[in-house]
Length: 300
Image (tube, helix red, strand yellow):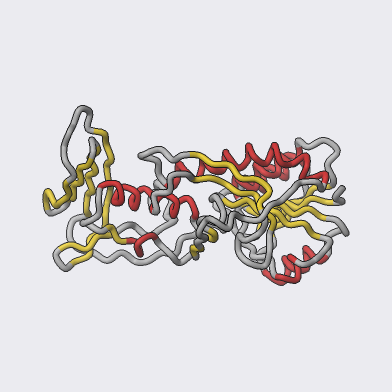
């Protein structure tokens, strides 16, 4: 039995992880720590409402000290967390560190996994709860679940669906995890691993006008987080100039038997057609090069 549980992370995923832990009967003492200035105040608000000790600790040295001060047996649940645990903490026998990752590991280790699953047109997307090692997202698997992305789902929608899936899995996993009897298995060696860094953007942020509709759609949906500026705005190179993509529309053409086609329908529009689907890509007026922004989605 653990003496303490630490929730480390940010936003709704960390908040929901905390709520799931608080529903476990006869649980040990729980504390929460946030490692960045959050996009939402969900975790802090949940802690105040539930009377859970809460800290925001951003300096790396201070976080290392925080964990060195934990009790002899501490379970650490990392959920939407940007802090990379150094080897000294990973190898600390007092700590059992478990991380939530929104991919089917070893596929899409690192950052922005749902976007890469869409861009690479994976048949399945999913989640993994895994033990933390010194290498990013390479620890043994405690639990995995999968879903099949819809033909028109966006990165924003898929990220939310995977968060829901991860929380459902955690509820089933927690009794054994808190009791210290959860079984972990190695990641599947038959699946080719991939690792994505925070600076990476699918196809470097450019739509290829020669792509099929399926690939063009996958690219645009992979970068689509609605109004959240988590990726640079997508661009396309046409006639020797770069154009910023303003919007896109992906629709079904009921009863259509139109063959695959793509091309520029006007100065401000690209159109793709394929197997009963239409994709219309709207361009901003005039050529422009948008400033690059780093993705800010947290690890896992």
